[in-house]
Length: 92
Image (cartoon, rainbow, N blue to C red; front, side):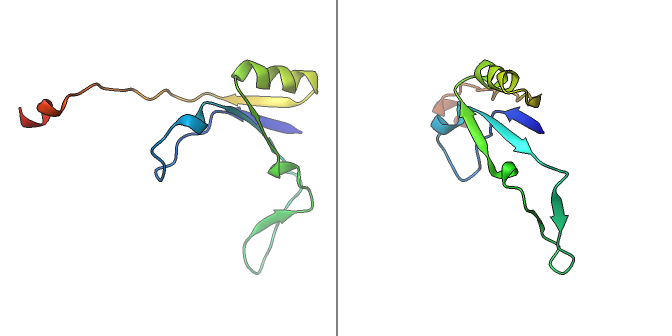
């Protein structure tokens, strides 16, 4: 079973970033997915892909995966660049 370790990005519908400082370990179970031919939906009998474990750091997530013999892939995220501007810059 393979897992992805990543830091979720902020959605466009939210302005705060307080919930996005956690790292997520999410299992991906590609073998057991079934495609419904009539509706085109993907599904399966395994609920492993619905499990998301949250950790406060990347190192904690990696150590958990190693301790439980889980193959993992780390998806690095790019940090947001903050450009400090003042209100007066709008009128230059």
